[in-house]
Amino acid sequence: MVSATLAEIYLEQGYIDMAVTIYTELVRREPGNKAYAGRLSFLKKQCKADEKKGVLKNFKKLWKR
Figure 1 (cartoon, one colour):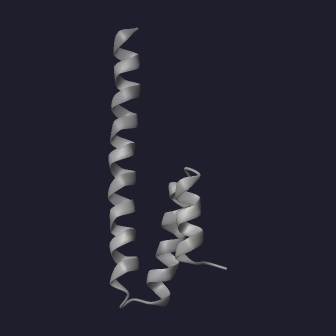
Figure 2 (spheres, helix red, strand yellow; figure 1 turned 45 degrees about the vertical axis):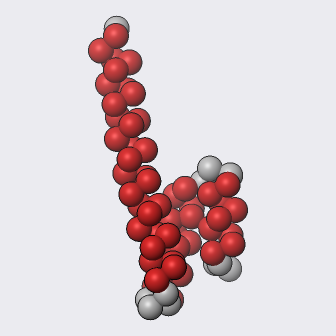
């Protein structure tokens, strides 16, 4: 069972990857739904930004050694 509500619950719990998976499926099922597509796009951008921050944090930790 997939729904936008379930995706948002996952987000509240910190499971961004699960929310992206659900929104991807919702967009596949309803390609014309701009709300789903917009939310998916936002979440993917958020994931990329978080990944970059994580890389930078790890780099800074290594640099301080």
